[in-house]
Length: 312
Image (cartoon, rainbow, N blue to C red; front, top):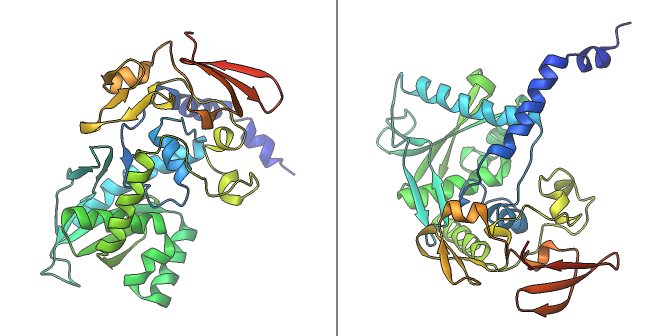
């Protein structure tokens, strides 16, 4: 009998490609803003980490799924354009001093179910299993409630986009990878919920320290698979940049301000950081023992001392 595990493990060429795909993440620059596409996630700490440029690493399988999503989006748009008018594919918004932003997939006009109403267009690629779960939710709850039940993050995203775009309906196309099978879900605007999401974003953006996470239990199922697990639960220090420094605060027009050096910082300056970097205390696995100017001494959980904030 052939050992399939050994057979696939021996595929060294493709394994090398997967490793290169994973390694390429370290060359990617972080988003400068908090994205509307993720604000519906339950863990505010995870969202704050993203804004503060804690690197979130993914395995090769996840990265390929992201790529499938981008390819499928373009495939679906091209198919829709065979019959309907799709536009505004470059439209986006900025809010909260330009620290909160999002970009829509487009708008669509003339759909058969409601030809007189312009709809927000959003496209998502998903697995066959999740596709069938949405189909079931649509049958059981009706399409207006199906999306919220099926995926609260996607629902929050389209509600925000409808609010900022001043639309009352969305046409959400959910497809299996490559556009082999697809279905639509129409959803109505909910401006009250959109406003609550904007206030959530505001709290996260202006939080000086990490907000409470979804769970303090590292065995919690959503935590176990989170790309921020090591920083959140194991207190592994993130990379040094201005966003992880306690002296850095968001300011107007999407800029950040260094309270130590009394200066604004653009995107590239934030990436580089400076020798006076001092971690935001919630990143450090210990308690503050002494503070002397920019020099901070922590008593770590293991009893040792950790000195931070001194020129490095």
